[in-house]
Image (cartoon, rainbow, N blue to C red):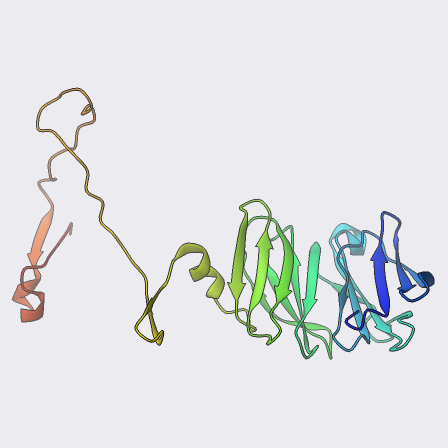
Length: 231
């Protein structure tokens, strides 16, 4: 919990323990199978626990309300369980209105609206074996860690596709930083017109049915540029 007065501890046992950090004593335990990382709201009143194999093996979130002082847990009276595939980690938005949940099995990020405990968005699949999620203090960035491809994917608070561009593109700041650019390149390879050491793989001639179009016929700004293709 943010005030560090209470600690929520999971173990190999099917339970979560609530510990008073001043006395180091257990003040409460609740039964939760296959517990993972615990998500606690910033005000300490709500706790979500990913259960990787809950709901008969498909996965679920256990939802609790927490005593603001002691941290003792009570299953949510309206929605004690939220069904979601193999949740591995979860994290609250700063205002507690959203919970970001990553799924290990189907490689998705799901956004839960915590007032009604309903999912409002699903992002993905992406990555390979999503195991962790973190949210920046402003709630504007969501970071998702992927185990098997060793990458971190980045999204905005609504799950938009910053992750795709951060994974597959590099950006460069231009001028005052108000614009960005991505770079492309055309590789140049050494070649030989005759077979010799180091040059064993032939590059075949241009196909005879390839059509070349001079783009300068259509616009002066495209003069000298061509495209090639088949029809």
